[in-house]
Length: 431
Picture (spheres, rainbow, N blue to C red):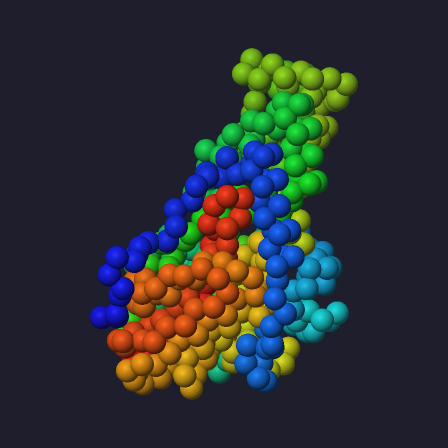
């Protein structure tokens, strides 16, 4: 058991607003104002650990890999350069006879690309081709993939919460797509807004003014993912990474069928996959179709360009240099934290213990002190094997441990009038 301060709230803050409420102009404006204010209060901090650099990376990234992916690798590269992403672990969908390892694997313009795949419920990044072994039983495949510096993570935890972690490097502790799946009513409401010319004009203006805040409106605390991570790390080391799951496919369109009917969907949908909407339901459709012919695109709104999506959720890796070997080694060692960088740049975040750093496993001794540092003020939660032991606000948390356990830190920021999750550290294991 871990020491727990009686009377301290043991749950993450609940969201104050729903994703749909967050998409209202006043809420988007309030969130944006908070982001600007946080940037103005950012501290200039020394490196978290001598000899290590905080590299902003993305896991679970798609480009040119499936019919439902709208973006290209050159487009992703340009976006990464634009927003300061250092490393991208590609997760191509497995599509025989193409080998996913025959992809970009180089450093260019300050961005390192590492090939990999989203396959069979995992994110895999082997050192060499495993094409001929992809049909092995899951445990055997994990063993092959993780040979040397290979990496394998359990993906989409909501679909497989009881899956064994045997042989895996770790798991996703957040997945952007999961939040979208949890907001199906909101997505339907958004689609209906696209069939009204006045609503479309409003959405176009909001996308222009508040693109990051709109894309992040669905983000919620991923308790399903984090609960599994906390349970599993009681007995084994597991690195938690953030799943960006970007495809640049959330480009919403309204396609004209005739003057009374349209199809609503995305740029990667076939006509039969889109939602048919008639003027009998939405009389405003006639204003959208006027003067247009069948097949014309009446509305096109891009919600997830790569330069926005890459900052929606990041995986920061502490490594001595920007090389594939260095990043792989650091990830395996758990020198990683996940963050929603759209709210604030987390560079400067630090989490350490007497004689150790994030990801380390040490023998517990009474009074061992954990220290956390933030570059902007927020709420800090220290958790031990899933239970909150202390909560404070500010830029620092210092806690003398009273029990052995697996300790991780969460940082939350007050954005737009509510507390929203910002940083999830990997654990320090005090056994």
